[in-house]
Image (cartoon, rainbow, N blue to C red; front, top):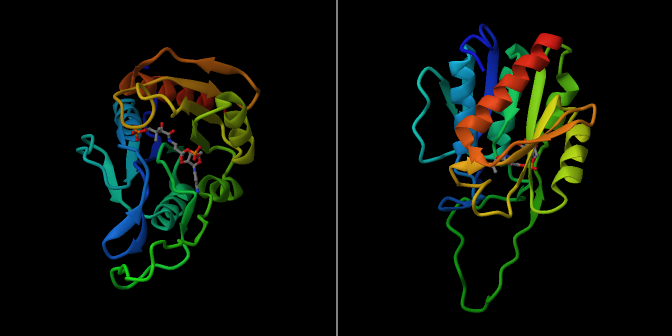
Length: 223
Ligand code: PMT
């Protein structure tokens, strides 16, 4: 990792957990703090890249020198990514993206009623952003995904790498409290398209992000 590793490259990073609205005051989301994505954005910026960080709401302050695009829902994230990806060299999807969203969003606050002790939410699949990106990806572009898994981390990660036609995937075990969602540390297994895998030690998200950026630079150089 040297300061000029990504000099002149345009890098998009996504971060945080998307919010899928039910009504004006409620939404479905997940435990993502944004720390992993913000660390990747900072590492890419320090490596000399021009970085756009597309972020769901987080409690974090923006890394200096990085352009910020605020989104909430998966649909907004998809639009923000797909608009910008044609002009980017690298996309790193660290955001924790909802897989399902409510079929309808109520205009007014949903009320409880005296005769209903249960309510049923009907959800539909969200667009798979990385799959849509794969369809428009040019040979010079590098796409990186994360896989948030609670079991069969390697096998599920390998499947996601292939399905989303990624150049690199970082699989993390989100069943652990000491890494993954919300913690300052992480441990990932980098999975490459040729089947080679490499597990990092448990370390800070800052160091994991630098390792990821180094790998991206190597992949870009070989394109
Ligand atoms: O934010 P932190 O608290 O620091 O936590 C970090 C993290 C655990 C959120 C991060 O390391 C991580 O694993 N991010 C990916 C979370 C996720 O959505 O994983 P997934 O296995 O469901 O999705 C696989 C990949 O496809 C991801 O790169 C995801 O961004 C992308 N995706 C998912 C769904 C969807 N509809 N479109 C997508 O592009």
